[in-house]
Amino acid sequence: MVIFSGHDIQILVDDLNDHASLLQEHGLRLEAVDPNASRAMLAIAHELWEMQKTLGDGRRTLRQAPREEGEPNVKVHHTSTGPPYVRIRDIPEMYQDDFMRYLRGAARPVVDGETGPVAFEVDWLDWFHDRRPDRGGGRAP
Image (tube, rainbow, N blue to C red):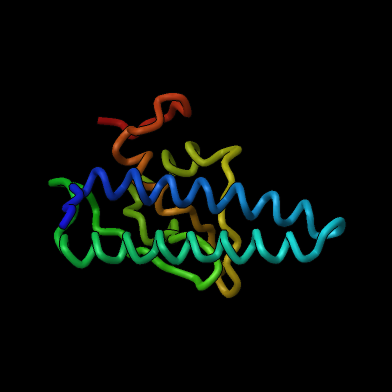
């Protein structure tokens, strides 16, 4: 049996998200030209997001405590058609403004029924753990 570390699982989850997003983008572009190919790509993207959700849920089940000392415990939400997301209002106020600045120009999920801004869970984690130096605007120490 292969055992993956939390870091390895996060890399797998991020890769699944990247592949699913790319398939969704291409599937939407193909919709007018080849509806069958479009539906197939969107179905595969959905399956990848479900795999990502399962991996992420397993990781959260094994680790009920925050991943890092001092990391706020922000509730993660799921939809049946997209990757996990967080509500900005659930993030502690001391981080909200800086995180919103980090998100400028970034893709953000659109979730039916949500009344406030939301962000992909991976963006929240990348920002909090300063994993994206190419984006700048990391969390203040």
